[in-house]
Length: 127
Image 1 (cartoon, rainbow, N blue to C red):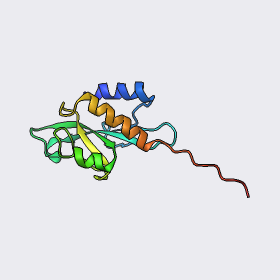
Image 2: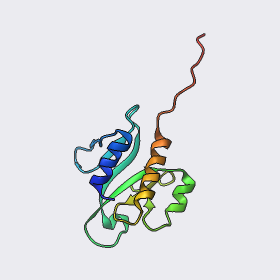
Image 3: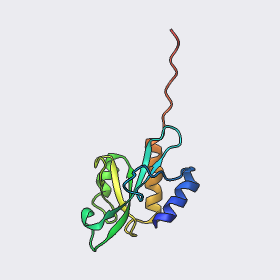
Image 4: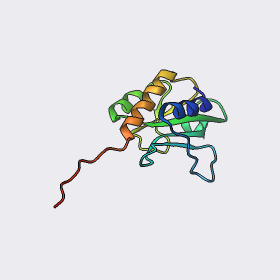
């Protein structure tokens, strides 16, 4: 899946447009819940060498939040890396170079959306 395709899909699927909060880096896109603004994904362009990927240049990667057991099991699989600049127990980095299938990426995005969505609090009774 390519970067542009992913951004179009996120907008259509979740009604979310990418946010570019990092002034020094106009490429890193934060994907947030409309209510509350919590991140559910981060799309970055990172030097391949920093990720331990073969080749030169930069790679588009997607960070998503997932269950720690799922993160631990996927980290050893081709197409998945320990989270870049995020909590490695709860986040996973997916290079968008074709190592992970589109279906896997979509499933992980759905899971990240659910894990980070705002929760409603039970109402308390007035005193």
